[in-house]
Length: 364
Image (cartoon, rainbow, N blue to C red; front, top):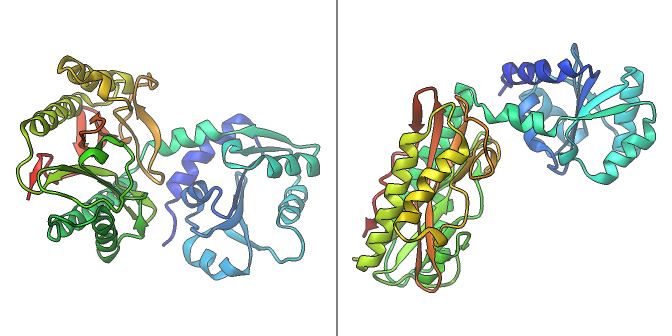
């Protein structure tokens, strides 16, 4: 599939304001597959992009020559060993007489950066790490549509998983079945390691599926997501086999209502800190503030965690087109945990909730 050039042009417009000659993206063993895909459409694990105002060049080896032609409009420069890959990149930079390069220092190893500086002593390097995550945080409608599909796949797979739930089944069995169903339904991959945490293990916010068996009456936290055409979904729901006790129901109600208040407040212009405070204050007033230790949410896109954040750290206004998770939780050590997570798009006058799966406590 050919890339959407609007993303590339958006980045070029921002970067070339800085009086640089070219953008350099090094991707070795998926070290920067996100930016590579975003700018060029190429999904391989080994490449370099060199982007000038007039030329869009990709360098890669023979494993990917055909794939580049299928996925990208970039001009292909073939890398052939035994010469080093970086020497090929450096030679091209010299031949084009490029003196100031923009790159993401946060996505390049210290050794590669040092090698580039050593081999290109006359070049200046401009860090655009923050600029890139900033630009990527605002999705176009094509990107949002891919996230919607990733959400739909995840939801449909979860419904299939609920059909096999029974007392005595292991957390790992449910996680494996859920991941299998997501791939059957069209996911490229899972978005992250699936969390299935039952009973006392639910108090682990990142409790990966274990060999623990699931028993009647205990809440089970499932946090899962699908990746579709590079874009991720990230959902969390809680279910019980049979009726849970009144404390579980009450804590779930508090989390549900805290999330609802946050969802009602999300819109462009409000800061992530303000949204986090709305949910956090509600949980605090209900007596469980000390048991909600993480941020309310995070950006979602080509990466599972990206800008913006919904936390006390994010004092910037939310912008239309940003996609965020909203995931309040309460974690009671030795007892259980409750978390509910939605994926939403920030709009000018509110938010669009992409998830349609019930947020109520699911009782099987």
